[in-house]
Image (cartoon, rainbow, N blue to C red; front, top):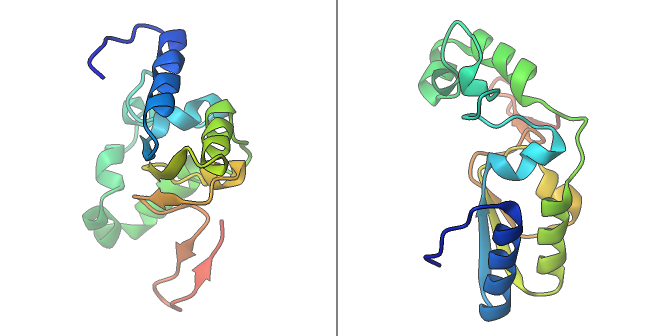
Length: 145
């Protein structure tokens, strides 16, 4: 779709047209889907990348940093990533509805919040994992948030 989208209403109409004209849709989304639920994104003015930390968030969230400085990684993870008191918003719910109607085959998400599943989506591929599945490297057990 090559047309320029300038506002939310146009975006909704464009998305509706896509679902009407394509029968094998997959939604690929990221932080913007969950901002309406109160979860900050990374790059906006109030996003995680614009807050003051001893290290930049993109460094803290790297595997190399985790291996070298797990205490600082876990401090950031607990303070900024474990956001549990949120609910799915209209976008999460609409995507779940589209999946249930057979119009959406899957959701591929960069989000770790689990809100797609909480809204009812079943086929969710989480590129960065989930705050609801945590693995202990010492005892090899999985823990929820």
